[in-house]
Every structure is written in structure tokens, then in C-alpha cells.
Image (cartoon, rainbow over all chains, first blue to last red; front, side, top):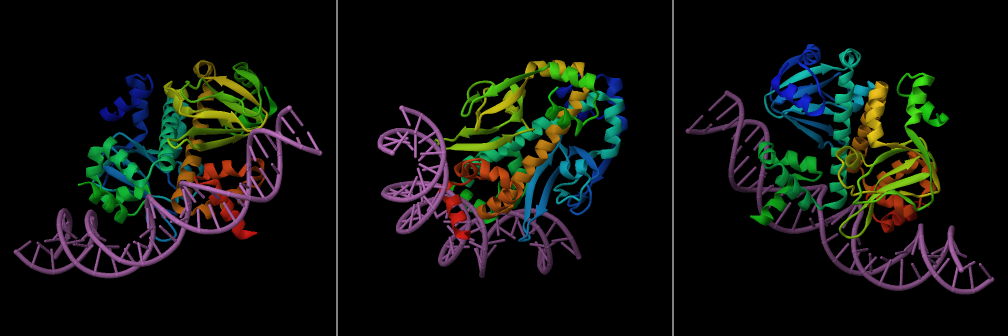
Length: 190
Length: 190
DNA sequence: AAAAATTATTAATCTTGATTAAGAAATAAG
DNA sequence: CTTATTTCTTAATCAAGATTAATAATTTTT
């Protein structure tokens, strides 16, 4: 089992090496080129991905043709379209590598077997789902309470490295405004 | 075990009556008066609540003193502050009954025992957390893509009964705008 | 049924951030 | 190294929704 993933899992549940080996047998390592997609809208999302290296964006295209980023994913995060994966419906989202990346793929059908073979996996993914939900609620709360400027500053202060890592127009999209407006905010300060 | 809850649980997992009885032994029924709080900000949220009857709002007070509603809860929904419950941190939220209500309380510490005694509960709450997260993401997506007017119309069309059930100013808050603006939207049409 | 409290409406003015349209910088590719 | 592509900036105009303030309607309490 990959060291990063093992460490990640042990942050959430107690698990021994044999059990980790079972978990590991369900995973497949994949390299992903910059700009390559792991899945695209209209297809059903089949897997979750644990990011070993690199960076992804999960976005949809709105009716005006703008790409709206719902999420970024970086090292040691799981990323997928939960809705499409769980409900087996065509995804509205696209999962694209922003950099050359490396992931561990966990297929959704295999995942059901994993839950049976290793009930602890159930606990792991319960905890992850709860944490992910909490993060989503926090983001909503920021959107309700903060101005665009405040949101950007908060994001930048909490993720300084990441802010440097992706193009500004993607950050603007994630934060819910236009690249022009982000540029204006940044111009004001310096 | 309460019929509604049993039916609810069986929508997500297979479980027999004996197991339901175990689940049930962890629950405590409570009546809640209109306007009464199940928990308030600054206190640590101790439980999840399954709503048998009535209606709740989960809200925080922003720096301008406005009450921002994060969630409503109605019959056959679980409601809690996941963040506070899971991380044992003081809640920023308030959970208040909008109507006279009846709930089943599941204490967070007991819940850990429940997971041990009944591993299926782990699966149940994994699925619920995932669904809850999906709903949260959908709401975010609406906020990114729709105007206030479109959000209101979508909400009303999908929840016609609920729209009648709560005061308009609470709906406005949930949707992220002022009561005055909601009134303007409604005035335009009729 | 009157008084008090809560909820909803209307309208004028103001602000945040979108849109449009150029052009400038920076990166990548030949 | 030089052309093409991608990313970022600036500025003018515009629109969605906030704010303020007053009043009206509805519901609750006495």
C-alpha cells in the first residue's frame, strides 16, 4: 500500500497492515497527463480517485458556456462525482488534471465488495463523507457571509501555496466570480 | 421502533426487526415547543435528531446581526450540526423549532456504541452523509448558476407545500437574499 | 375586540460584481 | 528566438439585489 494513503487512512481509523493490503488490492495506479480527463459530463462516473501527485479541477459548464469549478483536488484527497457514482446517473461534471498527476483508482463496483470484505472501510468512508459535507457547508457559509473580496482574502490566507499553484481565472471560478473581478480585487491592494 | 424511522432506515439498508430494536434502544423521544431550541450557538452540539413531526431551522447570526438559515428540517429527516457534533467544538449554529415538533434524539457518544453493536449503522450513516453531501453540492451549484428569481421558482416548484409552511422571510434567508427582494420577485408575477 | 407583535409589501437609492472590449504579459510550442 | 496560445489587467457601462424607510397586512395575545 502506498505510504501516503496508508497514513491518510490511519488518520481516520485503526487498521493493521493485513487489512491495508486488502484495501490496496482494490486500487489501481494511474498516470494522468496535464489537461487529461478522468471522466467527462454525460458519462457515468465509475470510480473515486485518491490523488498521489498533481492537481485536478471538477467543473461543469453552465448555460452561458462558462466553466464553473465546484472543487479542486490535490495530493492526499479523494475526488469523484459522488452523485453520479452513487446514483449511477450521467455526470454533469468534468474531472480534469490541471497538472501531470498520479492517482489511485477505486472502482465503484469493487467498492461494494470492499465494504463487505473490510467493514472498516465503511467507517472510513462514513467519516470522509461527513468531513466532506462539513467542508461543503463551511463553503456555503462563506458564500452567504463574505463579499467576493473577503472570500478571496480568506482563501488566499488559508491556502497560500495553492493560490500560487493554479491560474487565477480558475480561482475566480471556484470562488464564484469573474477573472476580471478577481484582477480588480488584487489590483486594489498592491 | 417508530414506524416512520423504521421505514426510513429500510430505504437505505437491509435490517431485521431485532436489529431495529437495538437501534431503537439508543433513541429518546422528545417534544419541542414552537420557538424552542435543541441547541444554541456557543454550546457543543451533543446529538442528532430525527424529526417525527414538525419543522426546524438551523441558522447562524452573521456579523450584521442577520439570521442566516443554513437548513430546514422536516418530518423524516435527520438534523444536527455535524461539525460541532463530530469535532466536539462549540457550534456557530442554532437549531430552533418553527412549529411544535416531536423528535427522536440520538446522542453522539451513544452513537459510537451503536456503531460497535450494530455495524450496519455505520453503513446507514455513511449513505446518509453521502446523500447529504450531494444535496449540499446541488445547492451550491444552484447558487452559482441561478439568479435569485430562478432559485426561488425552482425551490417553490419542487417544494410547494413547504413553501406555504414557513414564513417568507425564512425562505428568503435560506435562499440567500433579503425578504424585500423575495417580496419583489413575488409581486412581479401575479 | 383591542392591542401588541409578527410578517409582508412598496419604492427610492445605492453597491457589488457582471459584461464588454481592448490590450498587455507570460508561457508554451515550433 | 519568435510565433502562437494562454493568462491577466484595465476601464467603461450595466444589472441584480441590498439598504433604508415607511406602511400595510396578518397573527397572536390580552
